[in-house]
Picture 1: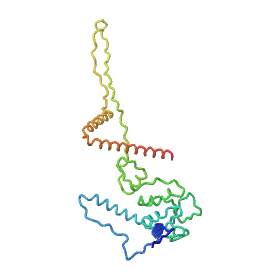
Picture 2: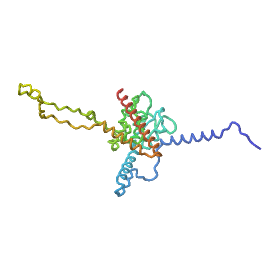
Picture 3: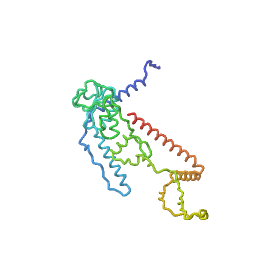
Picture 4: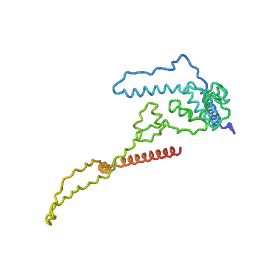
Length: 307
C-alpha cells in the first residue's frame, strides 16, 4: 500500500528551518555573552628567549600579537545603533569581535532602542537624517570596515552622512617594491610602524644632457708682421701657445643604456631553448604589471587634479 503526498515539498521545509536557524544565530550576536569563571581578558604575550637566527621573526610575531590584542578592544567603549538600510549582520559581527555593542530597530536581537542615551555612534547610509542627536556621532558603514582593516579608529569626519568617502583599501593586498601604493595606504603603513621607503617610487634625477660635449678648435693667434718685405709676408707664422678652460667629463647616459641593452640581449641569447618560453612569459608579465602601475598612477593624478 503506497501513500502519495501531494503539495508537500520537504526540501522547502528544511530550507526554511535552516534560514530561521541562521537568522537566530546572527541576531544572537547582539546579546552579551555570559562569562563562565574568571578569565584574564588581557593575557600577557608569551616571551621566549631570543635566538640569533629568529630575532627578527620573533619581534614581528610579538608586534602582530600586540596589534591583535588592541584590535579586540577597538570598539570596547562604543555603543552602535544600526539603521535598517545598513548590512547589520556584517557590521554586528565586526563590532562584537572588537568589543562593542550593537542594536537596531525593534525586531529579533534588538537590545536597546534608538532613543537610548548611551548610544555613541549611529550608522546610517542615507544623505540626510532628520532629528539628529548631539550626544552621538553619525557615520557611514564604511567607517567600521576601514577602522577594522586599519586596526585603529580613523577620523570620523571623512565618513559623515552624505560625504564623499575615501578610497576603500583592501587588507588582502601585500605591497611590494614597484607596485602602485595609494597615499592613504602609505599613511596607514606608517602608522602601523612599517618601513615604506622601499615602496615609494624614487623619481629619476634629471642629469646633464646626454649629448657629447663639442670640442672647440684651438685657435692660432695671428702674428704681427715685423718686416715690410714681400719675402717676410710669405714666411709661415709659428703658432703660439694659449691657455683654455678645461672641459668637465660627463657620462653619456644614452651610451650606457645602449651598452646595457646589448649586454641583456647577449644574455638572452645564452638562455636554453627549453627555458626561453618561460623567460619571455615572465618578461611579458613584468611589462603588463608596469603598464597597470602607470595606468593607476595616471588615474590618481587625474582625480587629484579634478579635486
